Image 1 (cartoon, rainbow over the protein chains, first blue to last red):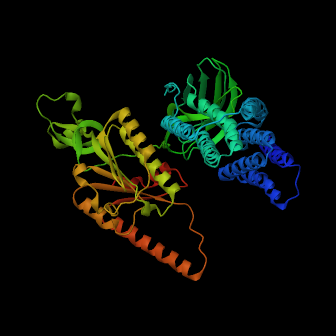
Image 2: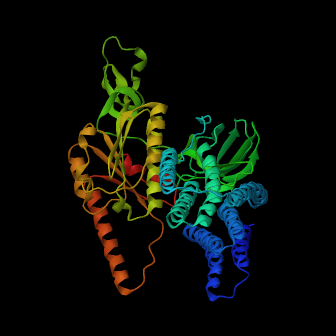
Image 3: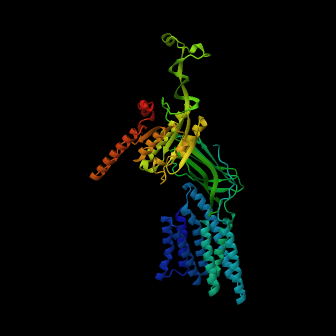
Length: 171
Length: 417
């Protein structure tokens, strides 16, 4: 089951490559980088390799989108996000028999979210918007402020336990 | 992990947005949209935080017992909420607790009201093992990002030192307490052992008359028995690390000896105090009875080796804690230089017993220098023991592979001196 994120990463890299018509340019050999990094992450349980692999998958999707194949770029990003979600399976600490069920449910949710994201991206690419310079600047400031406020809110939570107060057993 | 994941996604999202806006690359802005959507979804899961309605209850049976007891620990994680959760629960095992059998981690899908049970058995060595939380990772159905946290469920295992049964050992202090006990007080009174005869005083019961002595002396005399009283016993457990030369098993034996002696003296009705002398001074004020025995055993269960410059020598033993004339029982392997401090204790009027636990077997040494070093150490030890004996201390060398009772039986004559 640990192969799932690797397969999704492979699919993402292949899609980005396929979007350009499988060019034989040696620079596309770098498309194998995310797979190599994630294999290393699976073998050595290194989260840094996992994060670098995700970044390189996003970079591949960007290259694909910038080269004109926006739909395949979005698809590569959606697969990269699914792989990124399922990478939690590489650090599974529970029983093996539970893993399949958890993975299938999680992948279902992740595929749904990535699919909606792909749809939103594709739909927005159909829109034709004209923004004046000051509008663009204002939008940038607004987005920045919103992100800042949201990050402050997330950081404040800290991820602490919020379970009910428990009682000890008879001593 | 989840927060780190969100932070990375957030960074990528911001970078895509900024580059797209700054360089007017609409495709990058469009790529930022699914990423932002995914980020919002992850953040919404994270915002829910650790799911409420989870409750953990721990049961330890028995919660205390002597060394060798098999302890059963059960942790129940109950979903008291309204949502179905996938739970991964992992016990936080205190350091030093070795699990023999059972589960310390498990996963399950818990519907509301269902319980995930972790149950295991352990046979820990002496000490106090405190449990505080159980680690729980919870995912809602179809959620891949887990929320993890610690559920509080405190508990404790107290492993007391083993107490050896032994036949007879009489505490003989130089001063007795004015309450009845089992120590011979060297004065006439109520007791069972013959002490002597003295002249009859008017008002005494005629059954006390010693008829044969009366016939010899031609005057009324009565039999007197040796009065048995309680005495003050101060147990001193040496916790200096250097005295044991890193042999923690030997320290365990010393603790066992201290526990055995405390238990025995308290059963005989004496007033017993305990001092742990090493990295700190841990003093249990003298007392009587079963509750006090329990207090001493609990302190001994916590006993640990340590190091302190101040208490490196026995010379700093706080003698004002022990009344002059009381019995000092020091459980220690001793180090060179202790003999002077022990001699001073005898000179001050204490009766001093030293129980010296001796590890089994000599160390396997190789090489000429090592053999010489071993010989020098043996000679130093022989000199130390001779000096201790000469200083008036009753020394009992206890080979720990034998029961303490056997060693005490053999040394009974010296102890009763």
